[in-house]
Amino acid sequence: MKSIHRWYTFLYCIIYPFFNLVHPGKVLGREHIPEGSVMICCNHTSDSDPLYLAFAFGLKNQLRPMAKIELLRVPVVGWLLSKAGIFGVDRGKSDVGALKQAMQFLRSGEKVLIFPEGHRVRESRGDVSQPKAGAAMLAVRCGVPILPVYIPEKKRWFRRTPVVIGEAFTPTVATRKGTQEEYEAITADLMNRIRALRALAE
Image (cartoon, rainbow, N blue to C red; front, side, top):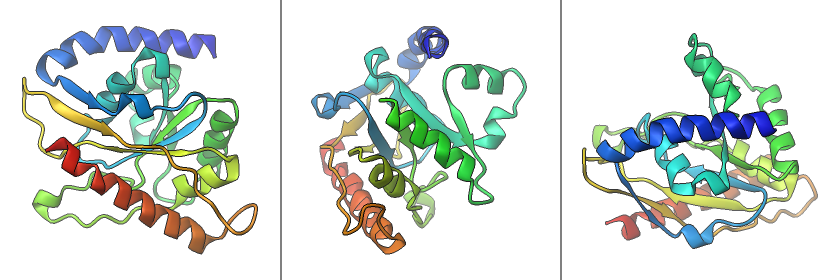
């Protein structure tokens, strides 16, 4: 764990000055970040979203982002990302191993970042959001709150892009483990909460 924190801090300190120069962020709602374990869920419109989130949460709240497995297979880059605590998911199948990893991180007090939509969704080009229920299932199984976050699609160079952090909520289910229908209902509620944050970003 300590080695992961060191690598995360190293990459953070190397990348932040350059990224913040050309893509500065403006954080709204940082006070909503809870202590301890939390499932962070954000809309996904660009490859830069994870960096906006990492810098918005700061070194005090280091994240465990779930990324597509292909990214971690890139020579050198994948090695560095793995060292910094990023873990991969195979989007082409039901990746039980990735879910088990996420559960382990949440149960050990970490902050896991997942994009429920699974890939970039841009309304400007007519993309349709089809979020997956994995984040809801993880939150229910691990008994942790979900933290909705919104980042606008339009990001201008040298202009501050708002990162809006909403209020955390704890999903409830009728049974201890929940059902697929309950996970899907929680996911729909989550995406509505994320979309509602758009008004604060305008």
